[in-house]
Image (tube, rainbow, N blue to C red; front, side, top):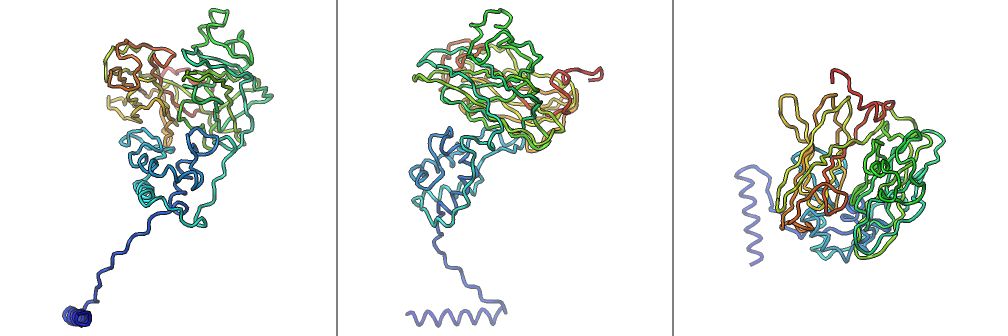
Length: 440
């Protein structure tokens, strides 16, 4: 039978060739595809997309630096990337393009899924890429200066913790340009968010508050300074929230810290059933030469929000116009537990709306969205921020769907803040930026 089959195939091939003068085509034999392996296929993806958080001394719950660390999590990793839960990214893909988008490609998702389905084979260690070099304890290069809160802040087992402040002198004897900055809480599980302000030596803000000692607004004896604790025009060095990445500004861009400035740490702690103490640090990498542009952080916020009980899609908005030309660099929305969506728009003169970013908000992953192409904005440009809130019982994070919710510091209250970073000429500080010309 085999011999007959061979003759038949040979005769058929000859007939085909004679009749059509075409090269004989032999159907390819399907071969089992070799499954992806850890060292050759999966580790490069983990290095590029995951290890900034998933390694020793970082906030993720497990390390993905080695095969031994990663293998037990293979199926969970595959499920997370298949559902696009990891790496975390919440921008609606219809609006804007962002330089720090960590999303995996469909090919990368398929690789990780196939690897897990095949039993997570290791493969040949010689196929591994060169290990990435990480600064010990930092996601930025080794800092030039680390400013650390001098005294730890005790955090109770339960209850609400008032905003806590600690003023840290820089002792800079000359002006500094900060190109990279990263905030590192010693107890990140207790930090709801943090803001580090730059207090220049000529500022009167909180001038009677203690230096190097934690304090709250209620512990200040001066009534005016108790109000100042919640209101300031000082520039921000950086904003930190769960999941946020360090600030890394491109060459020619940096934040300005005048000689003799203090850094004012504003810390919002939350309790979680375990007592702790936090001593937050901020690492600074200085620009190698004075930049052409200064980065300043601005915000659109609406303190007048009133969210009714049970409202599942409550809309709050705020708008303003730029007093001077600026280059838009990044967007950082901030809400609390009832936050649902957040959007930034440009309202053009003809009334048309250009959406820059729409985020499906996730309280536990508050990210900064860095524009892939910085956007030049003219003086008079109208910017709008819109926030939607879910105060219904269907929101699993809602602490009380029966409550009318207003602005407040605690997570049981709400906030509506649209931070955004802009670049302006290096000689223009925040005060000068807000001086409007008559034609703006």
